[in-house]
Image (cartoon, helix red, strand yellow):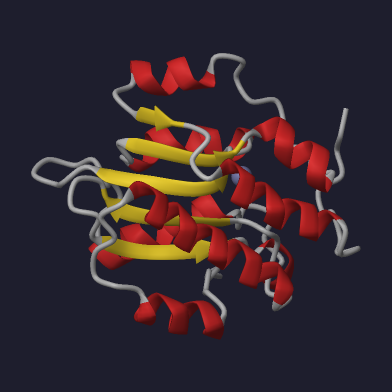
Length: 191
Ligand SMILES: [Zn+2]
């Protein structure tokens, strides 16, 4: 018994084409948004991507994408995929472990309730968000779940930086296009 999360071939190729470092925060987000668009346009998952970077230097660990439908795995949201693959690549269960640089998660939309919960467990020290939760739900119809009302404060209280609204308009463009594409909205437990 085992389970495996893999990136689609195009995303493996695109990761190889990324520079070793992306110093500018908006450029990191721009790369993540591009992955989110390719993922749904190439039919390899939902319109979500997340990248793990070394916060200070911008060194790229990897950018992952949502894999829920193709892998038959409801937990394979972009954040979980990116964090899990980064931990495998760096061979640690704790990205915030002793002696490690600060790692940053850059996501094209605010994490859902599940992914919010995964962030303190991961050791990530900085979260950068594009579109807001409201924007995602309005533009796509996804239900992002019952996230804590003071989620930013809860992360900050645990030493995790939160930066919101980075290239939100560009992130929303992808969600808008996805919403109009007729592709499946695969969660279905809206209250
Ligand atoms: Zn999620």
